[in-house]
Length: 253
Image (tube, rainbow, N blue to C red; front, side):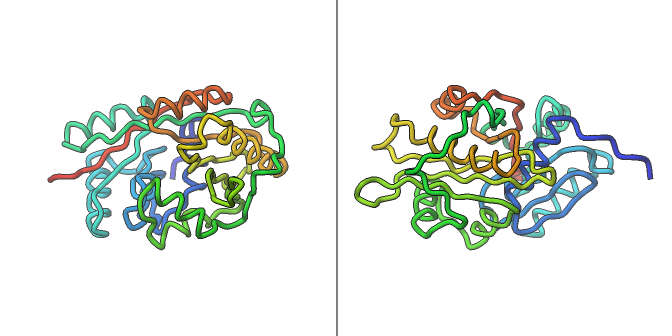
């Protein structure tokens, strides 16, 4: 077997991010990662195109289509661009529907000014209130969602409660890549009535401090490009766009 090429920085970040969002079912096609999680989230139910599938592109796409159909799911792919622009263009020609483009933003933990906030709680597992709050923003969570959220080497669930004891802000942070380099942030959300009070910033910084203590050095998050308020917030915190990925589904034959 010929030696496999090393991942590019874009592929390495995508690989680290995939480790932080483990699907219910995972298969590989060469370097491609085929993921299925009862339909919950694009990341958990799409083939991640990194490296090589070890097949001609036509055959690889056909394999992906069949794999998802066998599971009763629409074939879906997450394609880093412009690195795999030719693949994305091929999917477009085949009638795969484009979903919202996702930006992958990165920052050095040192630049996030890590600090401990006594009012931010970092739990080792998601409370029922945390799960209910996230479901209110993201839609119902299937049983497999809890495994996705917790089945990683190191994870914390950020919580902020108002004076009445109601949960008003949430976030998830994990360090899951083999090198322990990356803090992955997700599910950052603040109740509409409590926005513009710096709660998202406090959650991020508290999780950054936790990850720094574990030896992590960098941080990534994924946000839809069209979510301009969130993108602007992360830019103010010190994040910059590293790359984007195209999400596509084959909704009709």
